[in-house]
Image 1: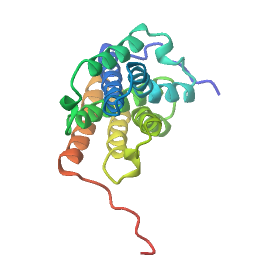
Image 2: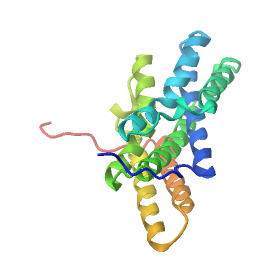
Image 3: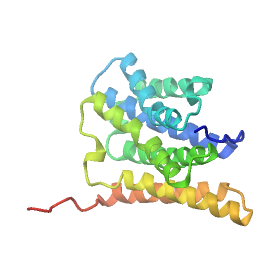
Length: 215
């Protein structure tokens, strides 16, 4: 079944969230390659795959044009981010700074993904799941290619933060339409709450309880 496509998919605010999410995810990919002493070509590849991976899967699933194939800024942002990582000392990204950057990208991308899916006529629950996929898949691809354990395999709050942003985005947009309000307030709140939850998880190492049945 073809979705009813709303021609007005992105607004300036979502455009900003899109580029912010791409840049932050691309940075996390490039820094991981830098820490492994890879070449610039590898760093650029990591930046691109991490930056566009989740959005590409989302667009294929909702039957939308793959976003970065039509936007000249996306690849440029990824490559510029790789250059930034190449010309800065890797110790600058040690500690939790890159984790917070990744968390901001996660929340931004979750909001963008769920909002775009809803605009393409996807029902609310699958649209929220598209936000989770948009936010998480790029990082999963990055970790698999780098040969490192993926964060989704740990109890730390990561997917949960993306799910919170996505659910608040969808719920807020539906409420905004009901009350005749702009969607922008829902996007801002959804981003802030998701990023706050992810930041709290990073700061205090908050995680979900692990499965223990049969122990």
